[in-house]
Image (cartoon, rainbow, N blue to C red; front, side, top):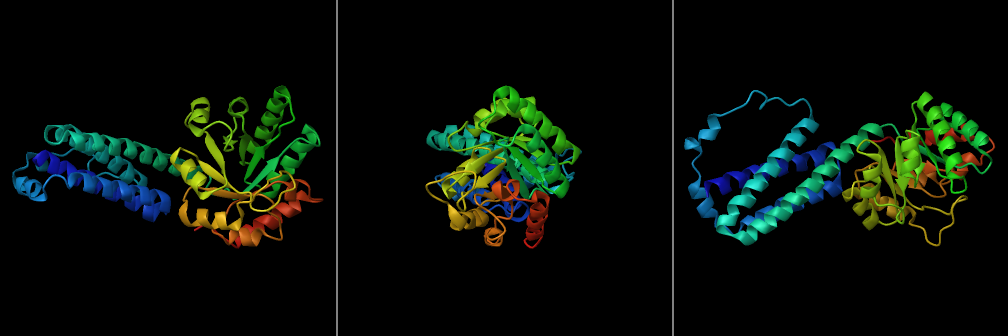
Amino acid sequence: MRVIDANRNRAAEGLRVVEEYFRFILEDPLLTRHCKQLRHDLRELLAGIPEHCLSVSRDTDADVGTEIGVDDEYVRVSGQHVAYSSWKRLQQALRVLEEYTKLLAPEIAVQIETLRYSSYTLERCFQISEDAHRKLTAARLYVLLDARRGIDAMIGLAQCLVEAGVHVLQLRDKSLSDEKLVLAARELRRVTANQQALFIVNDRPDIALLSRADGVHVGQEELRVKDVRAVVGPEMLIGVSTHTIEQARAAVLTGASYLGCGPTFPSQTKQFSTFAGLEFLQEVGAEIGLPAFAIGGIDATNVGRVLATGVKRIAISGAISSASDPPRVTREFLEQLKKFPLL
């Protein structure tokens, strides 16, 4: 009973520490809610063991472990380090609970195992969110390009855009052969690297790898995030297009680095039968802490309404690439973004 009591407390304490990190540092409502639910589920599971049996068995004064320490036990270098240490404490405590409840109530042990696996998923979300926020801290204006006017014209436009301040460029072209797509991707990588902008390839993790892109973006009907991750490895950003709040939640929990949210309005470059609209952006802004870019028909006439939803990053295509003066339009979008700073 002492083992179960100690590790029940250790697991609950670890969960509370990471929950506070999600809540106050990442300010992520979705992951905070999942962490809180995990804590509630653990409490409900262990409610099957009478509380007085656990409390009465406690003997903190005689616990030999209270006098044992290690050199780095009180060393934490950042809030992230605090949360990381708590994840490990939580998972170790859950494993101990799982093993020792097999002696008392095997049916509880099975459910604790499920909670332990859920904690691994949440920890992955924590690590991915940290990495995404670090890489995308300043990334607010994202432009999608294609080679409909030729590769050279696209590269020239890309050069103008990154010099004007675009933060992310995506190569989205369904017409180029693979050979030309690789060449175009490598040129865009060169242009973006020179200006410290991010470069993303649409749909093709193989092309993203060959061009040393910063990431790859997939839709709901393309490769799953876990399959893309198996190809590109742990460092590359993976973006996912989402059209409903359910898809947005699922993308976060399956390991997306950022979200594309839309379509918001009718677009010059893509045709849709339905539109997620501003209401979807409001849902994302209220619930999702992962970086999210509104997309679909965004231009100078509606960008203010988009940013007012709480989604404060935008992905643009035709409004910039088809403009008579793309750098000027880029600068105008950047000025609009300044009016809605990231918190």
